[in-house]
Image 1 (cartoon, rainbow, N blue to C red):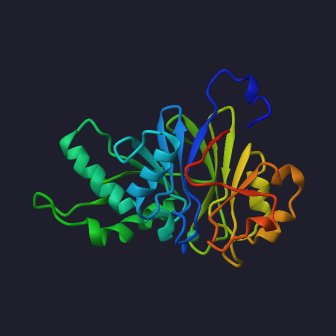
Image 2 (tube, helix red, strand yellow; image 1 turned 120 degrees about the vertical axis):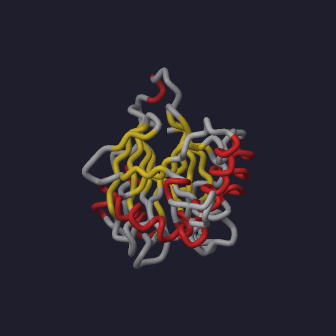
Amino acid sequence: MSADAAHRTEQPMRVLITGIGDAFSIRSFGTSALIEAPRGQVLLDCPELIHRVLHEATTAAGWRADVSTIDHIIITHLHGDHCNGLEMFGFLRRHLRSADPTLALPKVHAAQSVLDRLWEKLAPSMDAPRDGKPSALRDYFQTHPIEPETESHIAGLSLRCRFTGHPVPTVGLLVSDGESTLGWSGDTPHDPAHIDWLSPADLIAHESGPAPNHTPIEALNALPDSLREKMRLIHLPDDFDPSVTDIRPLKQGEVVAI
Ligand SMILES: [Zn+2]
């Protein structure tokens, strides 16, 4: 919670953690979250089994959210543990829209280099013809580029992004409701400049995993108290030992108020 949060009259930004696992986890869903934004719900990455991911977290938290209520999806990168749920999200939403045309076409927000290759990933299963015409990405999603140079506005939130050194184009995020800011590392090797960029956030959700593509916990343990105290861990391997750090892992189904 930010220093002046106790005095604010509006609601804090609430973030439902929907997954905290890494790509190989058999215990946890892929790292992801659902943000209750001033003007809608924003899904932060879309892992496999997305319907179950949303069901389990919203049931635990008492939230109402599913494919019919989420109009915005931010994709940090195209590794499957972060985006494989788009196929099943897109199919179900298209089906729901054919019955209820008032439902919006959901928006995918991602770096242009990610959007450029998104259909390449989805097309083999999603381009089947309908009414005699092959399906296209625009039949399932609107796309909206987010770029490091430009602040984006999504459902009443402002969003900045920064590319990390992960092996495919990947962004970390700073998401603000104007009062408080969530920092989301995205998948990243240990990168002091990235942590410095995230440091103004009120809460930093930082990944941890083995080098060279992820951030070893030892590197985060060496950060100053002021950073560690507002940091929580995501994208964890199943054998992660929480006793090696004083930085607490986030939990699936947990709601953080920032
Ligand atoms: Zn990744």
